[in-house]
Image 1 (spheres, rainbow, N blue to C red):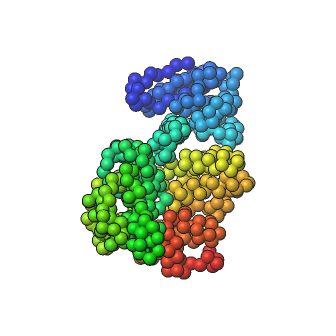
Image 2: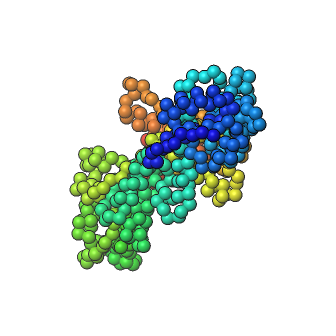
Image 3: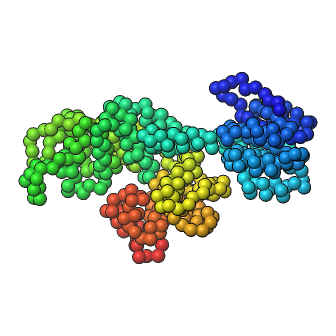
Amino acid sequence: MTSTPQTDDQNPKPHIIIVDDDAAMRMALSQWLELSDFSVTVYEDANAALRDIKPDFPGVILTDVKMPKLDGITFTKSVLSADSDIPVILMTGHGDVPMAVEAMKSGAYDFVEKPFEPNDIVESLERAIEKRRLVLENRTLRQQIAQRGSLESRLIGNSLPMRALKDEIANIAPTEVPILISGETGTGKELVARAIHDLSDRRAEKFVAVNCAAIPETTAESELFGHEKGAFTGAVGQRIGWIEHAIGGTLFLDEISSMPLALQAKLLRVIEQREVVRVGSNAPVKVDFRLICATNEDLVDAVNDRKFREDLLFRINTFELAIAPLRDRKDDVALLFDIFAERAAERFERPYERLTSALIGQLKSHEWSGNVRELKNMAERYVLLVGSAEERFKRLFKGGFDQVRKPAGDFALADQVRDFEERIIRDALDRHDGNVKSVMEELDIPRRTLNEKMKKLNIRRDKPL
């Protein structure tokens, strides 16, 4: 065995193990790969290599197929039995190609046929190194997820957008500044808000979540600010509002853009004066809370459309956190699906085996318009279905996977929006067999809004979809 040292512990070179009984081939490959900025360890004997390969090996193995003592196929199976995610690339002669194809079906990463171009080897190794890096990062993340209460256990994902989001949360959570969380439906805005609360100095106090879109306008003031006995017909006793209930803790106002303008003015006064006046009372009550708001709309546009107060916007977005949609962090899809499916398998007492690379690729090709909420729903349904993984995928995705549609250049924006909304609602109704409550939960919209959109788009539950 020979190896090249890694001089920079901060940024180690990608590690390649070469196993080949041909001394000339070992030397040529190692020299080429070292020039390509890899760290290389070479072995003449596959058994010796096998003794040194551990489950946390951070690199890639490049092995010949025909070798004495232990051939490359048997060697590959032994490596994969120790760690099924270690990428193994086979070097084959022309007659060994069918054997290498069978080895790939058993888990080998790739094969190259001799004679080969060195650049082809480098390209395959670079892809395999990136795959190994993601696997090891996800393993580390799984260990962190197992630590209950940690930020990693709340916000699952290791993509660049998720890393940046977690860094921002860790930075801002200990402060008292108001936070505005923006993101599409299903991205996990309330989950982020709870994580901020749990990392703040108020974590021992209440986290009060209020969905502004779900409160009827006629009772919204009473819900938020509370009321006194006899304040209006039906007020048979005093009621503490959500704002007062959050004293000492965190008040989370979801879908803040749905709040009526008149109520926005009163909320602004509460934020500025730090006191609330119940309906039917003249006595202010001092309130102390951390304010976190969330929106799936652009509030600047809402201000321009006179649907949201500009002065309130200035008060609630001292710091803004933007959650990337799932389509912009595809590296998280496989890990999220695995974790959701494993949890569902445990809950429903069903078996679950991790997906093949081909099925993971199909998952990543899906548009995920419903974001993490849609992915979680799909993972749970996958576990509950019967049949092979491929058969279950066909049932889940109706025989295919959505791709982002590229509308024609003459397709007006309003028509594109209408088409998109209609497709999302019809697909959701189809998935839930017309169950409106389930559709409301998946799309995170109140019944009134869903009914209005269905009426506008001429969608009926009893109408073929």
